[in-house]
Length: 304
Image (cartoon, rainbow, N blue to C red; front, top):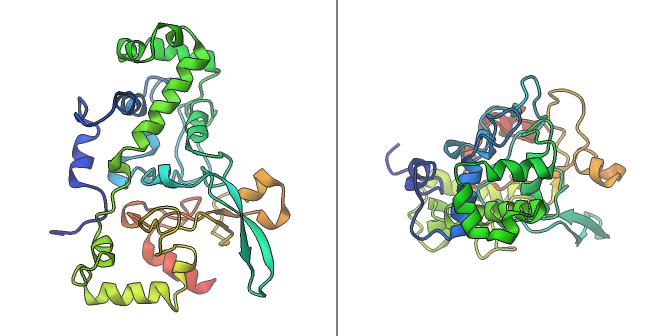
């Protein structure tokens, strides 16, 4: 498909996992990339961030749910894309109005599909210790694994002797390095044809694509949740970062989503609205990976 772009620089998929780092990367991000790729930290070894966030799938998981380090254990949600994850706002209550014009408070932002992490620094901590993910027993065990890693000397030099000897502080530097990596420009490109179109190049989209955009913003009502306007970032993220219950097809027992965290009945089954950037690359869809293709997603919405 010559000339087709989805928003990820072509160089990214080929080089991000290669040896070395770009000269422009700050040292903390370089360390974060090495931790992201490290599959020796899990118990048993073999599971890392990269295992569930594939570069070729826009750092999402092409499987409905991800298997963990321990054979037979798997998650119950589809691992979302890490593209633009650093731009998701912290969890907070927002004023809005319902269809009757009544003021109501709704939650927006937060990381994980159920918003259980306030922000991205809180999010990157959790997979290390989840039994269905990397399965590390304790922060002390994680720090010990960093000290035995292939990049131990580099990490020690970066953080200094005092932090190197302190489990809690060493882990905190590791978490911060992952955030630094996820904040690198390659995780938030705005170079898709739609960006050129919004920048004034009306030939950037085909006639069919312009018709699709019109439907997206009008009768399709897609843009009510997948905002095409500017909100928290100077360019459109195609998400309002809010939470909705779509009635997704069930793959197992019902997932309480946001309501499982808040305990509020009306928020049961709600999940954060994902960005639609790179959506062609991030199948399967919905919070549990229950829908295989974009066409099936549209058919599902038409039936709702």
